[in-house]
Length: 109
Image (tube, rainbow, N blue to C red; front, top):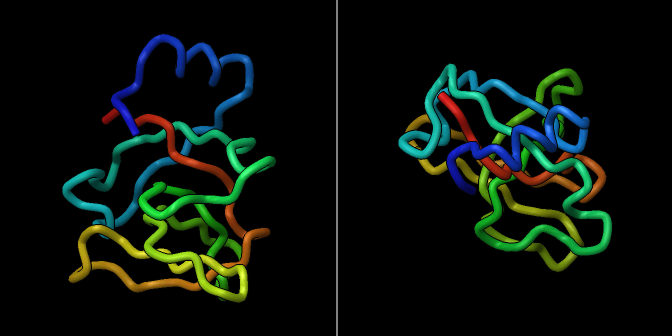
């Protein structure tokens, strides 16, 4: 993930990136509440998320909630173990591939 650059902003303008706002402290210090990130919703069409990727996912229990977490582990059953960088403010999630909405490509605060 990088700071936002002109290429990423152009991709957002032509709708190849989606914009999300960070609302919690689970990814601090990488991201803070109020930061905005750009997400590539097509990142995992041909490959699966890798350990270390920062992703946006649909919460596995709360259907109307999106979460931003880091892929910590790829489980043997195909699900992904997602964790926040700030363990004191984060809860882990196990999500199936269909709940991963995309890979965070850049942020701007």
